[in-house]
Image (cartoon, rainbow, N blue to C red; front, side, top):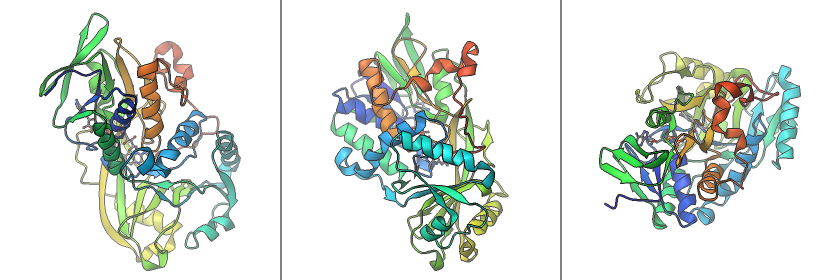
Length: 392
Ligand SMILES: Cc1cc2nc3c(=O)[nH]c(=O)nc-3n(C[C@H](O)[C@H](O)[C@H](O)COP(=O)(O)OP(=O)(O)OC[C@H]3O[C@@H](n4cnc5c(N)ncnc54)[C@H](O)[C@@H]3O)c2cc1C
């Protein structure tokens, strides 16, 4: 196996794969090193919501720059990403109505087709939903959900067709640095050389950061998910929903299923190598209670399965997209539970940062690394119209 490359990417999740695709498209096919297999980390467990609605201005820009990929995946990337356009509804408690309007306006300024709709409109969009506990919601007709492992595979397949290489079962154990410059990596399959190394290791990113002396402010967040069988009364499809009053989100899933995640029972600080087959003991009961409150016909549903995933969360719950540490070392990590939907544009921006010295597609300044240094903590990303929980 050839052991040199112009760029080495550590991690073959959606972000390593998207970056590999965009670098290969620019004629710089990278070497991707993955300790287990493609999409084995957060990407393989992701709920795949593709929505534009955020409460902080830079993020809708990244989301809207990603939407054309999802809508035209076979032409833009090749293969399939499973994008299903269902529309997206964000339900908020009455006390958050001003924030709802402010955030919809902010999304509209970013060019997103986003509207404030009434509870009666929501009822028309989804006749089986209960709508008596809110007056208005945000609605995005263009949004929906996709299949994260399929998207990662499609990105990687297209990258490989353009000369990128993926080595699986290959754990990076050290970063080689000479003077102030990155030289390559040490792995369980020997040494590989490159003047550029990108940390796209998801919740394992702190481990890779420590290899060059960087303490990344990333903690592992565990997130449980349940799948329920859909009763026929629910029909085959309905919009994807983030339901803030009940701190849950839900969407249709292939195979007549409903995917439900809860926002307030995630735990911080676990090992990213923990089991993924189990949810916490009381999770299913809580998910059943909350989904039946919003969608009463789910009383006739039944549990199909459940699992959990691990994600890397930063101190301000926003990603780090920057050069940091020795020359040639880049951070593409810390996606804090929201990284799938923005992966296409992030990969493009990171390829521009690496090859041109600056991203043009979306300005990466808000995601810079030095916002976490003690002198600049006041610059941590924070929205004036933030909600308590916005994750997925
Ligand atoms: C349960 C769950 C639901 C989610 N739902 C949504 C959602 O609805 N919408 C949304 O936008 N986002 C969602 N997210 C977040 C999103 O899935 C993540 O932000 C995204 O998948 C992160 O991708 P990644 O490539 O950065 O990391 P990962 O997918 O974790 O990839 C990192 C890879 O690095 C590899 N690696 C680690 N260490 C090494 C090493 N030493 N050497 C080599 N390889 C290494 C790992 O094996 C892994 O494959 C969800 C996350 C979870 C866990």
